[in-house]
Amino acid sequence: MDKKKNSISGYSLPERLLYLRQERRHLTQAELAKMSGVSQSTIAQIEKGRKDPSISTLRKIAEALDVHMAVLFATDDVHIFDMARLKIKYDHVDKLNPTLYT
Image (cartoon, rainbow, N blue to C red):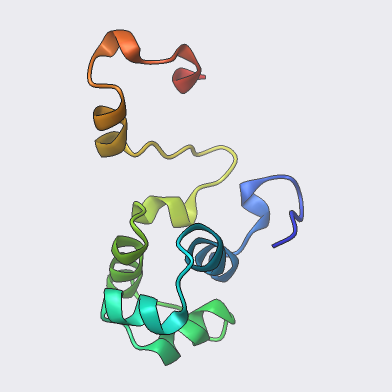
């Protein structure tokens, strides 16, 4: 995936899903389909931009990819924090890094 604009906003929903599936989770469409309960053909159509997924479909895919669904819609102006993971990594407030707030 080439960076179009050096920003997350430059990527469409299909591009984000494809990136998460292939580059971050190293899954095939069939594997993601099995994990999410969404058909492989639906995943293929979403990744090709031929189908607009429902919220429930996106929720299933996001859960299978182990990302918060909001990550799929993040922009340069809207930052998403995965609080559950932050709580695990930073089990005490003294361990928080000030850059998390900028």
